[in-house]
Length: 311
Length: 311
Image 1 (cartoon, rainbow over the protein chains, first blue to last red):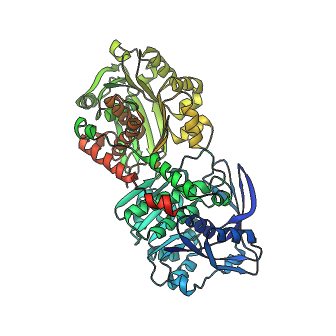
Image 2: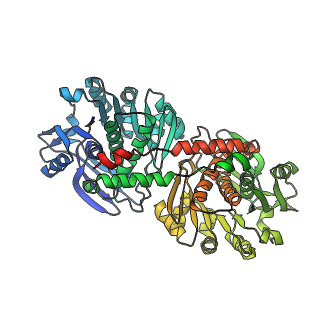
Image 3: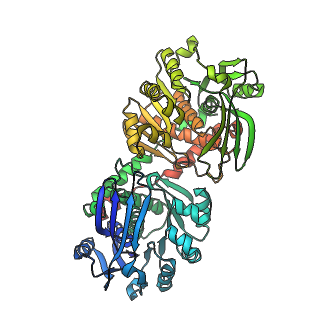
């Protein structure tokens, strides 16, 4: 099974305490599709300007990503510029130049409309609705969003969520959208909007998922140095959706595995700037860190103690 | 095996969005010894004033806690008054009246000096050193601290840590003590001070332990309503140490189990004010939630996928 990813293609200028990159490959759809490509066939729908370097499309093609939905149009590629200080959990946006992405209103082709697994990366929820209207009978649609849309278009966003199966959202956004400091309450409220699962990303604190059988908590990978957190959330979503699409299965077991697959790819993403680490990633790296995640959170039950001595 | 707990006995006045209690049973040694009493025999060393209600000593005795080291002296019991607002992760201290605790400088009895498992709850690190000087040959000494001592007596505190086996510390304090925003770096730095394990408590984000075989991450229990977080850290440490003392074993497996036992008791503590929930707690409650913690973080490895399809 393959995954359709729709969202931004960008050139990012990012400064962190570890260095700076200028006009580096970025964008939610790029991170997500690259992350998913380690698990399944991916097709991307997005738009870039004539200034988009051919080396980037070549890299995405080398990951076996179907770029027939990538439109290269007159004008400049979407540019984002941000800074991370001492606390790498917090992005400070310096500039956002939408450029060609401002007019992004994709008309899907016949094959894309039939897609079974779809990831709507963070973008204007009205565009997300426009895409949802075109999908024929998707197995599973996941969406992402950001504080800008929670503030600006809450009603459209709620429609997107109620028409999706899975919502990826970070902790601050979940609290903001549900107007509560309790992530547990926020997760329940979001889940009750009709989702199959809500996944709350908590940066260094890992992630938490609520689905029909309850909560699942995943740690983050204990990295001593996070060089550039850009794209971590999109890589997470891409790894998650790529795994589910590869399994064609949305059971609880698969959803939990998907959280870990997302965590694994995101943990690699943040080790270097832009997609540099992902360019060198392979299946062994992913399998190895998957097992490390397992070890990280495993504990044995002291059966005897808990049934006898505690009384 | 039994556990010796040394620290404050208090009467707490606490206001949260869920209510208020005045002069309720509290204090680090009280929370920790009560939590540990579900796992092992506990002896407490502390001091209270003549105003300390007999119902509290009766309750502690009913938990089978050895109170021969509890001194009731002329004067008022230590009082702490605090407030939690919308964000229950953040305590606002309103008043601290040390009262009889200001002169606390315990001289241990012969039996207490032989204790194998010892928990030095948060207190002046010079007093913690004074206690360490009296211990004969402890198997395992754990200590806790707070920002006040990190600021005020960093050198004495570092001595305490280097003479202990296990340090309990919260995330903000770990960052403060090691002057880094990275909890992973902080954990490594603290561990390298000679500890057998460092346990970083992260409130709603669970906890993380570093010991010789690496990191362990535990989630927090997904509680929709935290009514009073007071004593959560002390209950965690008490459950942790009580379990280890009951096992007489400090293997990695036991340490990991201890983190979960601590998490379980802490998750009950915060459900109600003061020690109200712990007063009704039993071994079945603990065993039940232990299993829920297991379910919360368990996932299966998709063996085939990770060894084949990912290539």
